[in-house]
Every structure is written in C-alpha cells, then in structure tokens.
Length: 80
Image: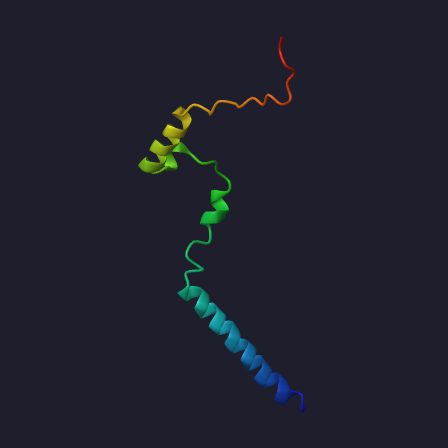
C-alpha cells in the first residue's frame, strides 16, 4: 500500500511529460503532413512537378557538354 505513495506521483509526472511533449510537437509543426512523405517515396520525380526555375536549371545541365577527359602521360609509354 505504501508503494502507491510513490507510484501515483510518478505516474502523474510521466503523464505531465507526455502532455508537454504532445503540445511541443503540435507547436513545432510535427504533425503537419503525415501522409505526404509516405506517398512521395513511391513516385519518381516528374518533370511536371518541378517549378519553372528548376525546369530551366535541369535543361541547362542537360545541354552542358561534359568536361573533356584529362589524359595522364605518366602511365603511357613514349611514342616514337
């Protein structure tokens, strides 16, 4: 029976911590979008989902030629 004098205040403290954590999470927008990330991983990035700025940047990177490959002369034998 005397253990109740310890367990009741301890359970009230834990309940208070849980309520505080819940309100902290709500205040810091932790519950804004629960389904979005789960659905987002199922789909590839689509061209239609990009903003116009992102679309232009992607077009520029596609048009840019790759840098020329550098050849190392240390590994090659001299030509005669």
